[in-house]
Image 1 (cartoon, rainbow, N blue to C red):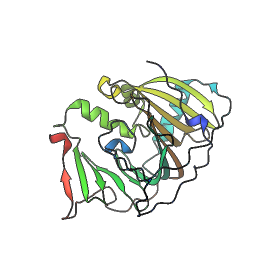
Image 2 (cartoon, rainbow, N blue to C red):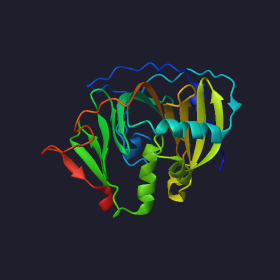
Image 3 (cartoon, rainbow, N blue to C red):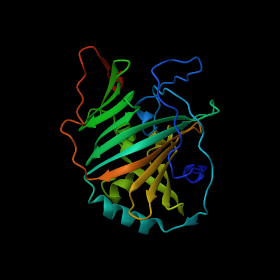
Image 4 (spheres, rainbow, N blue to C red):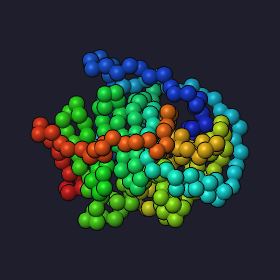
Amino acid sequence: MKLQTSSFKNGPRQSPRLAPFSTSQPANRICLKFGPWNFFGFWILKFEVFLSCLALGAWCLPCRAADPNAVLDAWFTTQTNLHTWTADLVQTRTLKTLTRPLVVNGHIAFAAPGDYRWELGRPARTMAVRSGDDMYVVYPFLKRAERYSLGTNTPQQWRDTMSLLQAGFPHDRREFETQFKVLSLTETNGDWQFALQPKSAFARQMMPQLNLRLATNDFSLAGTELVFVDGSTMRSDFTNAVVNPPIPPGLFHWTAPEDFQVTSPFDK
């Protein structure tokens, strides 16, 4: 497999300038639809991204190789003390058919071992909420939602692929090495940057490479980048992260209002 260079090193650490959200619909509005992988980008079913914005500026600092085993050991040591995590995010979607990336800001909350809530847009225009074996992708403005069951009745290949959503929060090294092959590790701009390849052949058909960015000072998750088979990418940069914050009760549980239409794509 040809290793694709991560775009992490080509952008400044500060967040890109975002165009303000608007409920109006100008003539030049870009309206696309993403699916549950809108958040980490492994598999695109449908998408709803509401604006395009200015492309990121480009600059980089020299890279140097590092020992993957030593960095992984330090990372997994810090993971044992992580129970909950929240952060703001800026997600940048690059497509070969567009001259400018699509950019949206949002928020993420995570609770070990695998519950999470992604919100894109403020107010949220798309959400992914997982609790236990159930994950919902919710489109509040469209009053629609999709339910994905990740229990034992779901084919293993789909469960393996969906589990990649939690690539930034592995339970332990064994789990990580079961899911990924490390293609490279470099240190640049104050971050460790991993290039990873999913070991699942099914997952590689959708996403041949995943890049992770960890802060060198505390091994906290700084960003992720998904590389799709068509060469497009989806990058998430995290800021204002808080380790082990209290999580409001019910944050990871979502109940469909009566006027929402809920479908189950895995049941088709």
